[in-house]
Amino acid sequence: MSWVALSIISAVLLGIYDLAKKHALKENAVLPVLFFGIVTAGLIWLPFIIWSALSPETYPSPEFLVDPLERHQHVLLFVKSALVASSWIFGYFALKHLPLSIAGPIRATSPLWTILLAVFLMGESPSGWQWIGILIVLASFYAFSFVGKLESIHFHRNKWVACMIAATLIGACSAIYDKFLLQDAGIRPASVQAWFSVYLIVVMAPFYLLWSRGAWPHVVFHWRWSIPLIGIFLLAADFLYFSAVSQEGALISVISPIRRGAVIITFLGGILIHKEVNFRPKAICIIALLAGITLIKLKTG
Image (cartoon, rainbow, N blue to C red; front, top):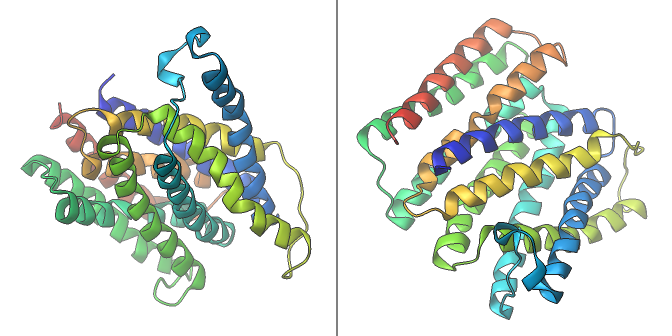
């Protein structure tokens, strides 16, 4: 399957992941929701890590084989986990307090920063048509800032918007780091995701323990079925994403905007499930977004 197709399927799963997050966070404590979602993903990968280490010759699928890594490669993956944990902490708190149809598009501005980093730091060069598609996508994201004012969300002075922007910037750095891990460092997708999932638990455990010991005021935690779904859908979305990035010729500056097409799923969920308002102006932005993503796909081949 091409890296473009993998990116599109990943975007759909990422949108479902966002819907699960919104359901899990409604009137619920943020840190334990985040932590147990991470634990779910880590526990899913743990048996595969053990099987790969003890009996690789009996492992059923080479695509999911977790390779033995050197010490410096484990350090690289731990850094990846720290980046993602930082982005998620900001993002989860923002998502709890913002409408899903506003939070999703803000988070989706990540391609702007990813493109700038990819072009100026990694020498990527999207084609002219790809640039047009990317610019259409980014313009539709920008339009959401005006839609937000209809719901009394002023982007320049709302602290939850600031948290989402922080999550977005860190996420863009993480996307560039993904390409380094998968192409330059030569770590295979399964190995990246497996160890990254385990190290996320290590990174987030101190925050959860501090929360559980009352280090700061917190909302009561309620267990919901959507919490483990957070980990499951993210695993599926990320595996397809890592597989796309690892392919020869894959452009992170194109993959990132496509993947942020997940906002389409979050938009529909926000309107249909959470009964969010201002459907028409948001729909116009989403149509523009779809046009840009379609153009990127058609001109990528």
